[in-house]
Every structure is written in structure tokens, then in C-alpha cells.
Length: 525
Image (cartoon, rainbow, N blue to C red):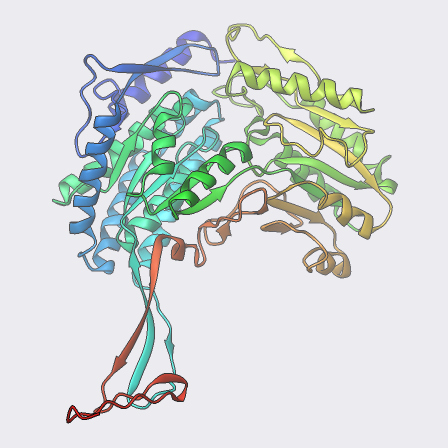
């Protein structure tokens, strides 16, 4: 296990490489806000509770100035041809590659991910940058056949202006890039409000990407506003200067954001809660299923929106598959994520530990039996950390209230089923609809899962887990997950406005639908 001195040395190295000793301002509007005399929010590591830094935050006047500068930058950036914008995004991706290790370690220090997961998140930003470069030459519109002679009818897409992005702690930078790099290559500028639990990662990322813009002689495109109590997030929800607001977070807060944005007829991209299930059938490769379920349930200490929270297991597999999963849970190493071999790191805050305990107690009250876990851990040298034992439970009803809620913690509920129709009914019973999985080598079972009567989620996985997604596909979910889509495929259209264009190149003015409208050219009646 990493000692306190190891933690300190990693912090000093990472802060030095990323310039965080020089810059601990939480507002960037083309220049970093001076911290003197400002209110500050403090960042602490969930690994051991150690203080990391104090971050200066701006006020309403600072926010308004930032928005004014964002729109000024948009006026310049939107005139740059899209392929040239792609070249700039390419340079940003290359710069992020240079900081892959240090930025990944900062994520570990700040939110408790293992270094492999932290590095993987930075790699996602790099990958989405590569995707955006290709997209810069593929912002296609459709050409349609006009019903009128000598007319051309087509669609084109324009940037919206300033796009707002609000992100959560569990993925402190990748979802920002899904939005920001795609929006920017279309011609937008981006205003980012990160979780205060991940402010340092946001500051470092903003610093890196805007350094590239400075070197290219371009205006700032990526603006940042950290807050401590959600005040900037509320301003963004209500601000007509943000025609689109992308929000990642809880269902409850997402509903508030959507209502405020809708009141001003603003657009939203909502990525809210997930309550994801994996179905394991008798025709599954049980070795693959075990790995998929375990990773889906344990990665990031159960703090992913795509975490596997329900295992829908055929009753015939209880005696064969379930004991193997129990062994995985009992052997999973919990501790300092900087320590090689640790699989499960800390929860983000102490109140998350309380939610973990409360959910388990409620499940037991609803008839659940604990198969593994159910303990809060105090680890030597990490007394200030937020560690819990991953917990596996079975025996409760599929429609019990606690199962239908999302608890951001490593708790997996096991529910049995007899036939596939019952499995689908259990799967779709919860109000969330983000990610889903089936483990089966039976073609009929797989196709049924992928049909309209199967998974009702935005993401459907076959013989792979619910957690994780490739950047090439559109990411998002249905029902209370919000219906938004980010990242790949044609999700870019959310950050653009569609314009239908009609061109008459003839010498007459024929009307559509066969209408006639005669005007007396001589002025007579």
C-alpha cells in the first residue's frame, strides 16, 4: 500500500508537471482569475482525506464577463473553415498525449480512480479529439429533390454559439471532451462547469487545451467556471446566452436543469442516472460473463453511470455461477488506488459512504441476504479515506424500491428468473434506461434482447459488460436517463442548428404544392 510519503511525492510531481502550483484559479475567461480576495473551495483527496488545494471562484460579475468574451471568441472562431478547426483540435489531442500520465494520476489523486482508469479517461479525450478531426471534413447536409423546376433544396448545419457543459466527479474530463471537442470543431465555444470534487482536473485540462490556442494565435475557446454550491450551474440553466446546455449528473438535478432551460426554450443534452442490469443465461460463456459482470460492478468503486447494479441470473446458474462471483467479491482488493494490485478505490465523499450503508440496510429490510461485503473499512495509513467493501446481495423482489433506485456505490443485487420474457420484464422495470447487457451464445436470445421487446436502454451490449463505451458510438440513455446523446455517430448534430435552404435559379417563381399567386405587373385591378 502506498505510504503518506508516496502520496505526497506523487502529488508534488503531478502538480509540478501540470502547473497547478502556479494556477489554482477556478475561472478562465481568456485569462485566469486572480485569486486574491476571492472566495475559495477546497479540494481533498478521497484516498486519505488529505487537502490538495484551494481554488478561487468567481462571482456573478466574473461570470457575465466570461460569457461576453465567449461570444466574442465565437464570432472569430466560427469563421475559421471546419477543416482548419480540425487541425487545431488535432494539435490539442497531441498536447493531451504529452500529459497522458500526469493528468491520469491527477484524476487518481482527486477522485480516487486507479491510475489505469485515470489514464484511460485521458485517452478517451485523445480519442474523441481524433474523431473530431475526421468529423471536421464530414459535417454533411442532405440534398433533396425539389418539386419545383429550376430549384435546389438542401440542408446545412451552423454552430450554435456558446455551449454550456456541466460534468460530474466520476468522469472529471472525458464527458467534457465528448461535448467540447465535437462542439468546437463545428464552430462553437464551450463554457464548462465541472464538479467541485474534480475542479483540479478541470483546471489542468483547461490550461492544456488553451495553451495550444494561444500558440496558434487563436482566441480562447474553452472557458471554465468552478463553483462550490451550484450557483453557476443555476445561472447556466437560466442563461439565454447558452442555447445548448449539456448536463451530466443525477436525475433529480437533471430535471431541475431541464425545466429551467425549457422555460427559456433552450436545448439540453441530459446524461442522468443509470440502473444497469446484466442478464446471464444458461447459454452464456460463464467465464466471459464472470469477467463482464465483475468489471461492470466493481470498476470505479461502483461510481459509474454505467455500473452494473443488477444481475439477472437464470435460476439454473445459482449453484454454478453465483459462488464464483462471491469469490471474486471476497478477493477484490480495496485500498489506495495508487497501490498496484488494488481493484477498488475509495468513494468520493463521506456522504457516499452513508448512502452505501443506507441502501444495504434498506435492502436487508426488504428481504435481501448479504452474500459478500457490507462493511465500511478503515485502512492503515488511509484513515481519512472513504473505503467500503463491495457488496453482493440476493433475495429481494425485483420491484423493491431500493433496487429501482441508483446508489452510487459498489452494490450488486442478484435477481433470479425462469424464462427470457421474465428476464426482460425485470430488466425494464426500473425508471432508468442507460446501459444493458446480455451474456448468451444463443442467437435467438441475443436477437430478442436487441429487439423492441428486449432492452429499453440507449446502450445494449452482448457478451460484454454494461460499463464502458467506445467513442465511435453515440452515448446516452432513455427514460429517466434523459434521452441525450454525446460522443460519436451523429451526436454532433446536437451542437448545431439545421438550416433548410431553397435556391431558385430560374426565371419564374413557381410555388410549392401547386399554388398559384398572380400579380398584375401593370398595376391594374
